[in-house]
Length: 186
Image: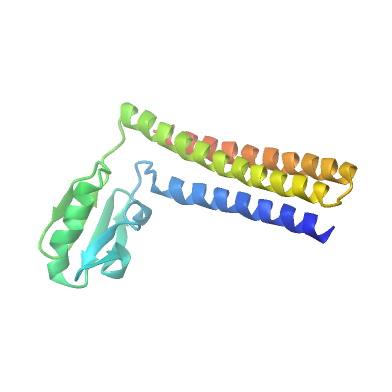
């Protein structure tokens, strides 16, 4: 019995991770407002080591449409600027020799639709993660039934598992729907 509880708990933990990953991915999808999340995952070459940009510079939002990146060492301006240009986020950095400014352009209708597609794709990836967790848990449940777990209990746990999957898929759709609404709001 404890084995079955462990299987269900692991499945739920994997589903929680899929939701966390979705939240993390959606913070990177910009909505026309400046957010440090747009650049926080960038890795910059710092003395031969790939280092998160937040560990070599101060990143802040100065107003609703501007992100300011102030490196702690002036020689990091070039590498940070190159990373931003190569990242293909659609923002051209402005370097004044002290700080890098990123001006977030207002979103066009076409760009909004592109970002909605990106958000939906992240949602689909999250759903795949939830379904993968279900698949693994079902395999473990079937093995437990073979190893002596009563079949009716196995079926009941499969039903519980499917209900859990449905709940998580619904949450994913709600999160993606909210992000879509946020992106499409002018």
